[in-house]
Amino acid sequence: MKIRFLWIGKTSDPLYYQIEGKYLTRLHRHFRTTQTTVPELRKSDKHQQITQFQREAKKIESRLSPGDYLVTLDESGRQFKSLELASLLQGLV
Image 1 (tube, one colour):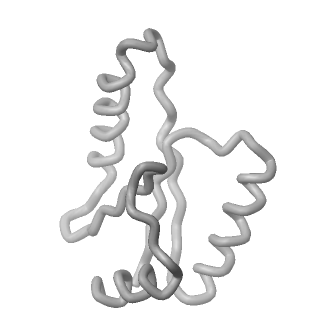
Image 2 (image 1 turned 60 degrees about the vertical axis):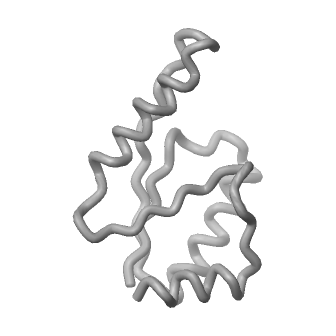
């Protein structure tokens, strides 16, 4: 299985960057992984945030291949325990 990460913008906080690297290293022991950064669009207007998210989503969708399984990480989404996430990934194989 190959896991491809598509980030929107670069991680600017050094602590997050360090944690990100730690987890990617752990994952790389078990899966082939790649990372791609999709440039974050500049916020021209605070009221246009939904439009900006839609434009960024289209940029991500354009980089997907047929048969890819898309998982979106969001602070308001469901939180998985490690075993739950492992089970979900195993079910995709």
